[in-house]
Length: 302
Ligand code: NAD
Image 1 (cartoon, rainbow, N blue to C red):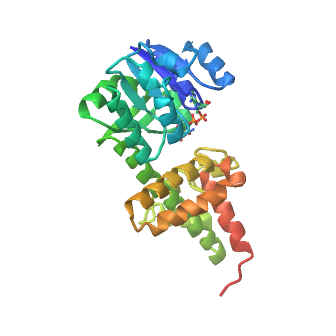
Image 2 (spheres, protein in one colour):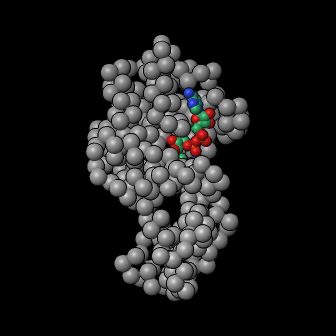
Image 3 (cartoon, protein in one colour):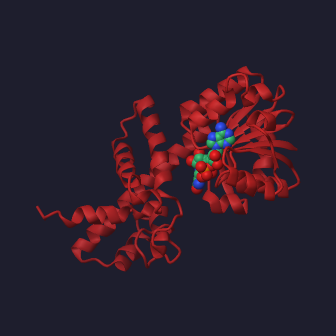
């Protein structure tokens, strides 16, 4: 297939390279020279502009930082992707963006005579490089089926979550569970420390009891019980605090627009935003345990 790939950053760069490796012709564009040269080395044809990349291709994939970048790239006055692409082009947005922005991007693409799905990913840079991303997809069944062969090159698991925007909805809901559960696991470990309970003892109990969850058994926030977790490697990500803060910010937007009484989700969003305002931005999100411990140090028993 002929594919335009817009946004050749940490995720988009290796994804575009995997599409080239699978035999597709990929025309890429990014604003940053380093991203452009790395992709050129991987066999991506570098276009003069996003619009230039998108003219005369079958599929346009975007992997951009946020909703405003996707919407701007789609509609940039007179020189956007939607104007440049030939009618009926399949647009696949893999960026993580707000559900409302995803639906707006979908509507713009449809109004311009194209097809469009949202297909955010989980699996991080490691998954992008290995071609093992998981896709949460929103859009029409025919368009999702048409995207299937390309998404299979990039990842192992593809879940069609429903209509436009529902891939983003699934991502936001999953990451809200993750953010909340990591805070819960971390608070429990710090409470256990104060009560004289060893990390190993709490892990041995909770990992086989009702406290069991991914934040505990895969990404355990204390060193020791799960040797591969970032806590054993100075909290190197993994999944960076900045990305968790971003995704919880999208959850907060969705909570506000739907009016859901998600008190714990809102609190988790605020906790991770404070974490990511400092060094936590570049640490694994499980480093939240250190800020909980620090804030507990000055506190006196009631
Ligand atoms: P990144 O900042 O490394 O890459 C984004 C790229 O988009 C940059 O190279 C930037 O120059 C480029 N860009 C911005 N505006 C552009 C424009 N108008 N035209 C062309 N290029 C443009 O970010 P990333 O880590 O690759 O993340 C991309 C998306 O994937 C984000 O939405 C992020 O939330 C999501 N995501 C990231 C991870 C991760 O682990 N990094 C995991 C899952 C999802």
